[in-house]
Length: 216
Image: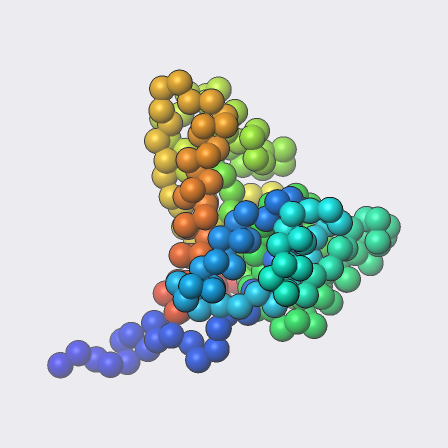
């Protein structure tokens, strides 16, 4: 007879995981997560989207999906501490449990990092710790992979802290580098894995398979 208590932390939660998004660009990873929620592959719901680019595709996606969204940036809040507070307040007000960075390019402020410590996640288009850190984002990551002759790349979901691409790694997906790859062809294959990996990782958090509290 199996011990019923041994799997208690893998039981599905009664309530969906409450997600908030910070975005700068097109928001395709955010869309992949929203799609996973709508099809039932991810037991979560999007509560709010904060964008630092008023014309970003991510904010347009949020509006189209009926998700509360805000443009908060140095334009709306020239003072860094004020911007940090506004971002944190938006997330708290909407009851967010886990914050997902969807192409968000700015370091987070002290208050947001403290309030959501261990519960802010990012996806990086490479296999951290390789090709991570300030300046390594988007196309630059893929160019670095090709320039160094790596035989594989991939995507990494990690916890966000005060240093770029520095927090604990939660999950990775690997993608072979093919002969003749360009930054564009490699990026396209990595993006397919990003769109799979981020929702899958969030689902493991939703079911308790990944316990963010233990990482804090």
